[in-house]
Image (cartoon, rainbow, N blue to C red; front, side, top):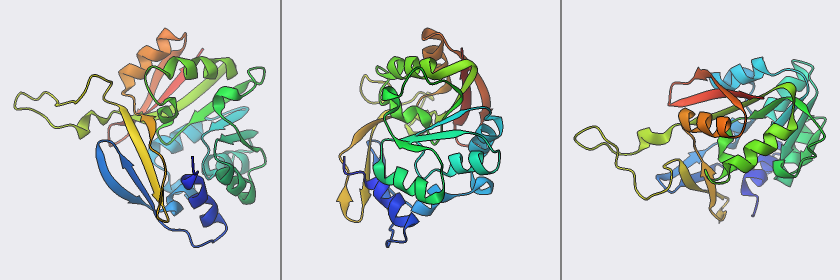
Length: 235
């Protein structure tokens, strides 16, 4: 991985001539995204993210923290103990420069299961890191092992069924045999293109079924305006 997402974040933080990111999926055209969006404050966050931060309590794990905006809010505005993790060294460097006290480069699957958290956040399509439906149980079991007794996992995603064309009877034209939320995602930054990687969007019913199959309760917290939702998983 070239860590282009992380490079963009660090460039913005250090004012090193940041440029827009170009994101693309296997079912969508290239789309420009300003890196500044990743540095938004609470008032500029979508309703789902605001709700998740309002519900966050206790000892927090922020998975896939990116530029650290969620962690900073919880740390500075709610005075909570937050551990921010991301696989990107550049993103973690930016988090530290922004003042996130506990930011580490780590794959969530490698975290010590003896350390427990009261709230685990997976935001900005948190199901994305699962990659595929087949790998989802592995991630859910890991999340389960990191939860304190009365802990909660707050995770968001989007049902992307709306992106597929309808036939005359109202059915959807969905290609292939795999789950329609399994996409290939790629990023281009400053003329460099990242190797495409799997990225998973899950409709709520599929997440709920996966959670139940892995010994977790699943509750729909709030729905957004664009087929997106926030869910709460617990033991």
